[in-house]
Length: 327
Image (cartoon, rainbow, N blue to C red; front, side, top):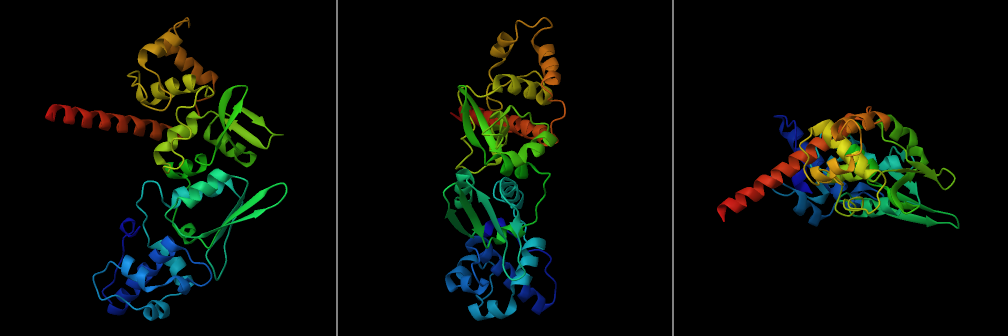
């Protein structure tokens, strides 16, 4: 965890430098181990030895206590901590919160986040490197989960990033309707998906759930944690993937199709075979279907992730070529 954070904007004032180092240490302890109750209950000698990285003599627990406060650490995490991990960052964490209720902030404690029923979201949070306690209240009709005292919710974030959208899409559940695989999300995300240009395929359970094609979460699996990244890839009978995948690849990467260049993308020969019956030909047919299926107003992050898949595949191909040439 400590490798993912850097200390920024040190001054030349000795006392300010010392305070900054303590704030950095306590922030990392809170981010990794959470802060139930008072943050000082989590400041222990073993955590100081683990996360202190400034090369000076280790500070004592007492020194970290009188130099820091909850208010200071909140400010420091928000303004000074830079999380560089491609998956576990502030954007992804806040994307997860889109699948639940509001995040509740408190003056004297770190924020908490609650949600109903979604076990996938629970699994993701339990696998995260960030601290915070998880509680579950069971009722006859539902389960209410809560992630309490979560300092990571103070990490700076942007709702316009790929990681944020990956966080939103990672919490879907696979649904089978009429032998077709969909991915379902709570109905509160319907307008959000529509704003992204992602088609809603159908609704179920009295419109409590909206179902979309598995290709959308599969595309963003590049920025999902290991516990869920393969849940949406390779589903048999997945809704519209044989149509959406070629359209997306041609739109953003041209006609040089690479088998599995993005999830569910078949080889070039199969694409031409599948659209051989179209009067205008396969490639013009894909352009027409893009308009008919209303895929012309997709969010720019779809374009970026499709291009990122191509980059990853080309990089993987080059590595294999280098290994083969050495052998």
